[in-house]
Length: 389
Image (cartoon, rainbow, N blue to C red; front, side, top):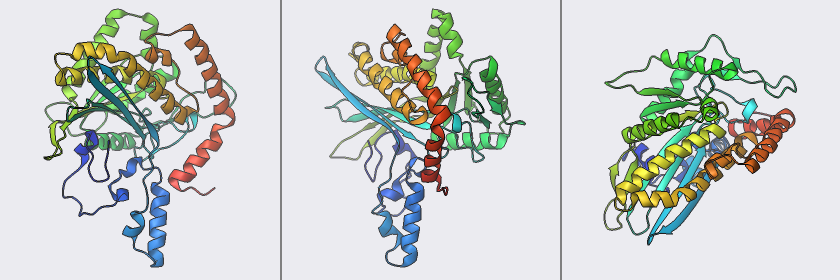
């Protein structure tokens, strides 16, 4: 959904016309926060320029930015209307790592497993695109979960006293990039997760952020494990109502495309959901898929008001499959396995086959974490940060 010169979806909101002289190379226009060959690319351009055989701009024009993430696009024809839905995700290189080896934030406020996901709606024949952006990332305080023995669950270690500076840097970056931030905290309320949740809430309450007539950061907590065990319909209904109201408040991005005239932005997304659980994988993907489904419904009702409700019911299966595949890919990058509880996304409920698969995935994560993830972490550090082996 991007050309080398102009972003035509939500990311286009970041562009400032006239800020840089043209022509610009693909390397220059790339968002370096998500550019996985940033370090080797900059090293190559600087080294070649230092020899005098070519200038830095010429070298940059030959470097193609690399992105690590997920992409899938599905389309379906319903009632003579073709609807195309795409998911584009990209992982930040600010704090790259493997599950138990990379948690929380660093001193610069970069969160582990920070992923930006954009859902794009396209209806061929109608010259317009609609998108909705959502992010996930590790709980943005300093914490770790070192593998000290062969125990199944490793203890969460909080770095006390809590350093507010990295938390402030993290949220200041989110506010400048996305606008209003709605934090959705899916951690449990007891045990290690309860301690981590309390530390996070305390850090948020202590942030010295500028305030306007409305809060720039909103915090919402939902104990996903406890609520799923309770199976309370009223709680789920309340969650859906809250989610819809927040999405209506944030909005979504919309742009009309016309070959004869300039593209016109008709709507802007004024904020973003930042969703987290402990790993930012399984529970997070379930919740994000629900938010994305509501956003898709709002967009369809806006562009096709006479068919919106019927279309979303017919598209639900496609949308669930899209997000289930997305969850597996994101989980593979951070944990080395597919996602847990993916049946909750793919078919809307947990199945016996899904429970058996979850057992296999959990065992695989355990053995990878104990015996092989350390090598993967070293490789990621070497590539993205230039560490010397």
